[in-house]
Length: 416
Length: 164
Image (cartoon, rainbow over all chains, first blue to last red; front, side, top):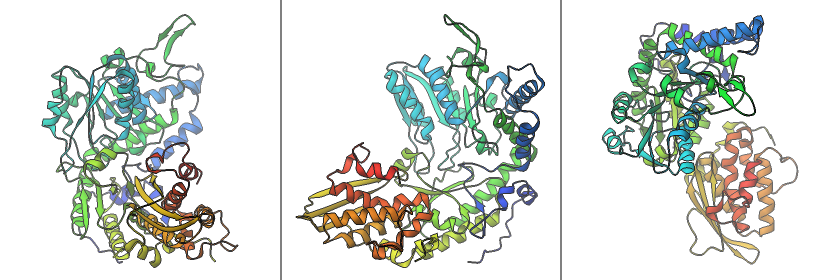
């Protein structure tokens, strides 16, 4: 099918210029240009970040925090400089409030072990939401099982929005912790976390925000949000896999017990007694992913050079155009229709299973995600077994939306 | 025969037709054997019920929630195995599974006939389980591994899918 030429190229003057930074976007799949719309699963890496990884590995690598030699001092300095870049990226008050983890899942598990196992006990309640990714459900279930605690779940409406009134009703004297995702990975809903945090804080309850799907798309200011914890992953942010961030307020991190034991997280060790290191090192046992952490710093530099506002504005135009085009296809239903969304489009096509859609779109070079997106409670609530999800990044174009729509028309023709 | 079928040939008219109008779709009033197979990757599930008359499959039916590949595979499977003996069916199950994971020599001797239309899934590792699910569920039913226990350790379907 011939692509319809769109006149709606958004006001993102440099989208082609930006695309030139991403070598992987030049790939052909089965002779078709790659249309990468699986950014919510993992984003692609621009050349400056790749170059940074190569420069680190070729001229700066050694283990950190221990050597007195040139390379160790260089690597340590670069690693800590990256921490400060992440601190500025989320406007944390101090760099010691930024802990490198292996990703969002690791960060949430850190909070569960470090805070939850110390401060949550039998009969206590943890408030989560229906929208949560399995990674912000399962660790708390493990804790609840271990301690005899209970999980309370904030419901959503048919559009995929949290019912904030119901959230507020869940609080009682047993409530000890709140975990909420900033942006839904499956539906794109942007949750009203700031008032939710304020409500919990008015009752003295700490709040963890899973920011995995928010950090790549908008300005994050943890001081303005006033959250106790904020987490995200490097690889959804044009950075490498294997690295992520846990932001925690210093006073929270200091009250917590260590998660993993090992080297670097200690001040002194004897077989009688170990004295733990100060934050953030208390939570960074063993040799961290140094190269990945430095690469993430470069990714943040790259995003800030483009500007998070410019990114958000371009992606909003992609979302609006794609929503309009999808709604124009008969038999297609968008799942997740909150007014406040990032550029994630989950949808179902009448009579066609998402896995068949995914395989057939792949034949057109179009990469989408199909399935339950690690949010089975959301699928259950919205009564869809699975969806197809197109998720956009700032390097996607209106022409790629058109390619997706053309691909879906082909799918419908095959299954007609 | 070309053993390196591409994905385009996977969605052939015969598969689309069986997806549109699945044969033996539904339930049996009385079934001597029954199993439910789950694909944990996507949450799809398939219910297979059959009646053995001695060693021979007298009647068979399936229903469930699945993609076109899985549904067409179940539809064609039920058509092919009806009237066959348990021993012959177990041979087909093994051959189908080997074909789906690319271990069967399609030019050699086998009993798959037009079921070779599914050979293309071999090129799509994430879709292999879709095609195999009905066959594993049938295998489970024949071996009296019943529905809810598909995640149990003694479940032959579970084990076989794991190494697929």
